[in-house]
Image: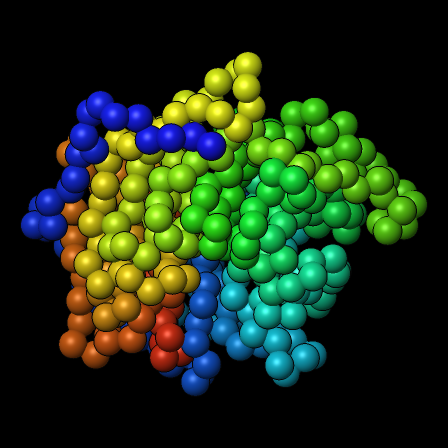
Amino acid sequence: MAKITLGCEPVVGSLTPSKKRDYRVTNRLQEGKRPIYAVAFNFIDSRYFNVFATVGGNRVTVYQCLEGGVIAVLQSYIDEDKDESFYTLSWACSIDGIPFLVAGGINGIIRIIDAGNEKIHKSFVGHGDSINEIRTQALKPSLVVSASKDESVRLWNVHTGICILIFAGAGGHRNEVLSVDFHPSDIYRIASCGMDNTVKIWSMKEFWTYVEKSFTWTDLPSKFPTKYVQFPVFIASVHSNYVDCNRWLGDFILSKSVDNEIVLWEPKTKEQSPGEGSVDILQKYPVPECDIWFIKFSCDFHYNAAAIGNREGKIYVWELQSSPPVLIARLSHIQSKSPIRQTAMSFDGSTILSCCEDGTIWRWDAVATP
């Protein structure tokens, strides 16, 4: 297990807002009574950069952000099981470029919704428990990964319906997996984290022929030779509690636990001994009152900034690539008091959405500077 190296102290950001960018509330929607756990803009298809989706209860809703703070409802999908509670969603697409919404939750079933015709394209059954996060491979957007309470991560092909790889076993997570992310440029790498307090980095390099095979498979998906990846290439103990969100920032990792901060760190792997290595903690981005689990941060397309909500309904927007970290803005509104489960930053970061425990969606827009 990778240990934190002693040496340079991490650079901690100041909570004094820099006023680099001002945002104001331009809309507030009450979607329903059930909590909204996830919100995501479509970064897969440039035609739909202003389209976002939310999940709450057994409903997936698609919206469009229009000028002047307007939010238009485009589609709504209600799952046949009224007891389903979706926790996560991700945008993907077929190899023909049709936009798909991939959603999962308490039932452990992944629904692939064809946003072109508002119908279920496929349902993936395989996880033995609820699904906490789904992410799409931006370089190959018909590949998605899912992180589950069943202690595994699975790689799926949404086009053919195949479960290609299962990351679990001897070196796998020992409790719920809460978050997973694809590396932005190394197509073989993913990072996952969870309730065992660790972040694990996995490589698909030696299994890549199976990934390629999944695109041309013509037999039943159930007959595909799904492979287990039992050992990660790196295990890090950066946090001393549940790790509920991790994202790659280049070759570095941003991760958060329940201790009021996001941490930026560098995994230093040893080629000779997989799983071993050291961790260099680079920066810390404080987030007050962010001490309950299942609060996820989001970034704009180019990872210039991260937005994260807290349990009091406030949002902190951090500039990621400056040292020391710069707090771009602290957003609060007198009526926003409910825990913010997730935020979504638009392509250029000019719009920030938050989805809340009380079933509301808030839209914040950057104020044009004169």
